[in-house]
Length: 266
Image 1: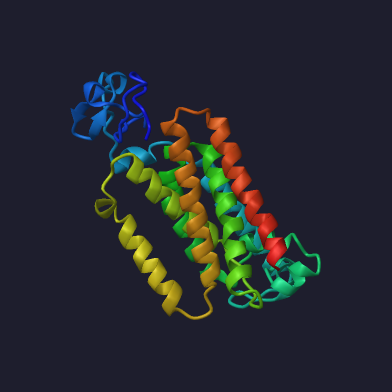
Image 2: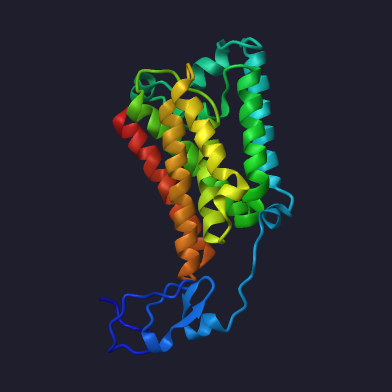
């Protein structure tokens, strides 16, 4: 049983809803957002509305979309069709378990920037734009980039784990990860998830994931799980007032673990 941070001899099962430190009855202050310690009770609670999470320019989101578009154009110049797959770039970058096992480790990463046709890349880029313009200003550009990369790698791991003999391309794993991270971030700020439509968006997209044809289920599940993990990491590090650099390192570590695990199971 933890003890009160101000009274070490008193055991308690209650923690401050803001900083997470354990507090005893004498140190509790009841607020509209739960019990708080004396220090946090004196702070003003900043109310954050959904619109406030999209005030800054999402430069990393724009850069990621631009990179995906450029790579798709490279696919077209490499011999891929407007609405079909193929060509040099696709053949050397798509995710395929046996080829990863044979030494093509880069496919774990490159597949997240390739797409199977115009509508595939268009849908993913629109999805990334709508999620990124809210998430990136909320967590910062560096954290956003790490979340995207970790989600992409977790999505590749999901494919190799659940569909090792299928060929997979697309940024949807990373996009689902951003959605998961945004859900965690909104919840940590006290924003109602139903009012923002995030839960509805997740349910609709997972419905298409399981009911649609030629969809990499592992990428969506793995990416979404990776994004949630990154979001929880950021939230917990902030609650404990740890340096942002430490949370970035933890997010990078998650991506590295997913990458190594992908190579191990390929």
